[in-house]
Image 1 (cartoon, rainbow, N blue to C red):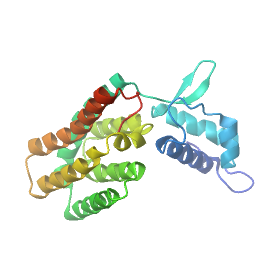
Image 2: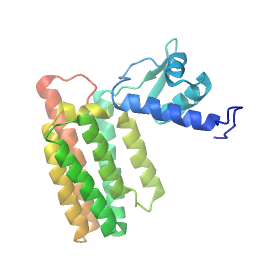
Image 3: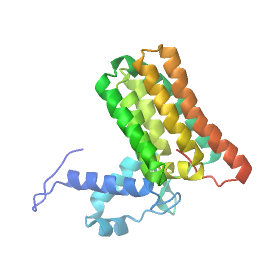
Length: 233
């Protein structure tokens, strides 16, 4: 995106980036819930910017699948139905498992220590559970493990999967809080596999099962409680 500088010395590109970050944060933390209508003029007023950078931000979010345009409605926050959730999580378990396995030989002791520190923060978070904070830490943890993936196509698919789920992500662990405790333990087991130089097959299987377990917990809860369509990781 080309930046132009205004008379005040502030680039429109930076304003667009600020608007993008602000709107995305509100989608992720649930301020803008699924189906919420994004009125550009109101958002621009709230952020203290013009409509132009907000429009650019909304276009980026649409490309990521967090926002959709509807005829006679405009821009709204995307939701996810149970079938879409199922397919997305199944796909993400496959591509993220592959990315983690490919990354493993490239993950050094410094990265392991960073991931373990994040996981300890997640463990501490369990005492006074904050599902939004826990979910952000969860993404930080997994990013350490899959970002070393040398295959850019697989890595792109992982990013797309996370983005597709992002609009509803804050509600997953709120909906199945017991899953959070299990997730932290599974993280440690995954780190140990990487530390001992386990085979790519073993690491990929562990990463896939870890992701699938969250899907299974959601599906079980949905069956028991006839949950609405808006829970996810």
